[in-house]
Length: 192
Length: 156
Image (cartoon, rainbow over all chains, first blue to last red; front, side, top):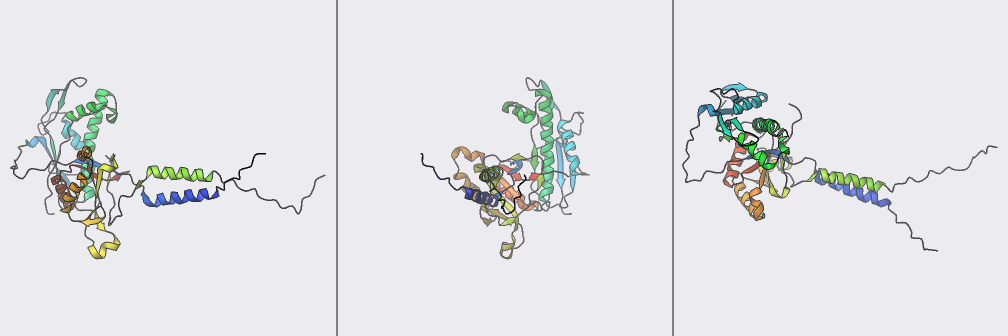
């Protein structure tokens, strides 16, 4: 008769794995690392003179946030929720209005063909030293959302696909049509 | 004929717990995959702002963090309640950021150096003055890829 191997007592296994579980619960944090990705402009070399770039007034959308977190777009008080629509309108300029940026027509090749776009538009965000971070981020978020929505529309129109499902060079083409141009001035003290 | 049992004690059968470790391990793996290790012990406290257009930070080895917030209770006596910056495990001044970035970058692989991302984890109540200073400092150090850490907004 074969010798019977005594069964290993595995009842403490549960305790060990519980211990491990609790250790991981304590040392880890639930929050995933996500954020609003932005790119800073390269620094200006100290020997280079700061040139005042002549930007046509119609190509510029000025967004100001004051110390009380109020938003002013082109001299008008505005709610953050309306900013996205306003920015989209500004970037597209479908009506070819003369107070919105100049519309250029350019052939982007298949499948785009000739596309009307505003290549010189700039959105300038100015904030106060005392502006709250959340208010600033709200504005940044809405502007990035405006670009994302436009790119999404473009992807649906020409490729019938979602933007983030496209190939990399297709995304680059769309980025050329809707280049992200958000310029940030250093904060000033506007008072208030 | 029915037999009346009287003094026979009915014993409860032992519960089979052999699958318990498996279940716990499953839980353990779940938590290991959805959570991330704390990078440092926080000396400042901050509540992330909210946003909707979020992207995930992909490679953790390429990300460096700058924490901005008010010192936690145990450091408040020493450092006051003003907004402070934390780099790695210590409080830092704004002008130390440049050096920190350069040091961190040189410790990376050469192929990765251009891909470094700086994540700014700041409290939502922070004033923009200090954030702007940090941004200027990052520009000077050529750390141009940044990410404003935020949580997903669920409603306005």
